[in-house]
Image 1: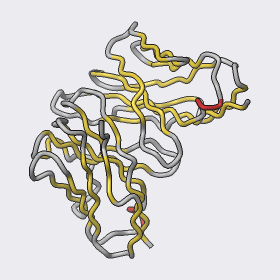
Image 2 (image 1 turned 30 degrees about the horizontal axis):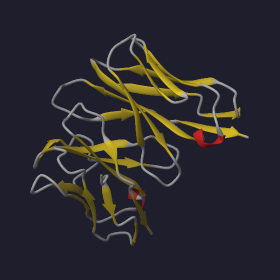
Image 3 (image 1 turned 30 degrees about the vertical axis):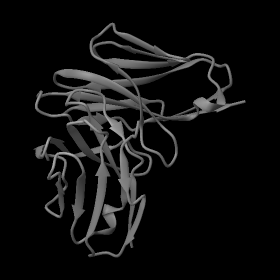
Image 4 (image 1 turned 180 degrees about the vertical axis):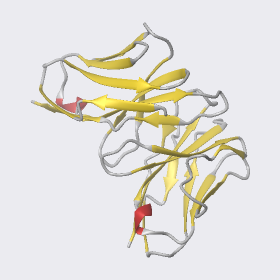
Amino acid sequence: EDQVTQSPEALRLQEGESSSLNCSYTVSGLRGLFWYRQDPGKGPEFLFTLYSAGEEKEKERLKATLTKKESFLHITAPKPEDSATYLCAVLAGSSNTGKLIFGQGTTLQVKP
Amino acid sequence: GAGVSQTPSNKVTEKGKYVELRCDPISGHTALYWYRQSLGQGPEFLIYFQGTGAADDSGLPNDRFFAVRPEGSVSTLKIQRTERGDSAVYLCASSLNRGHEQYFGPGTRLTVT
């Protein structure tokens, strides 16, 4: 069964304290891995897509990387406005489906 | 440009009633998805449309749930005989085509009393 696990469940950082969020996956035939940010009471906001092992994408203080078993979201010198829940999702299996399988998310709190 | 919109933003209904949730996708997006999110969990897939047809409805929990997209744009998720366990945030997303990144709406919070 396809599965996505994120760790840690919650993370508290001081402003400027860099860290990484982990997304481990077990799927048959990865077609893409997606990172989203979700603020309370809002829908997920798209951040990155990664398609193959070794690929990296960057946006401001965020960098996403992908291996054959996991993805990392690195946050460099975070600011309080980076506080949110970060969701990882995979697109896998048959090319006939667009179904995303999500992890449970990592809730990040950045304190000033 | 306009993103994905969903109405209503909140819906409170009594157990056993029928509800309809509406989704307006981004213009030009051929693929549309419905997900359900419970508190503290990631979204859970319900159904995917490519154009007017339901290409994958494997996530619908039972036959009380049904969704349509008659003209290949707006979609409606319909829930019959609602149960308290149906309470959740229902999210709609659209993408240019399947396999592309999905853009989510703000969700409809459904509460069944």
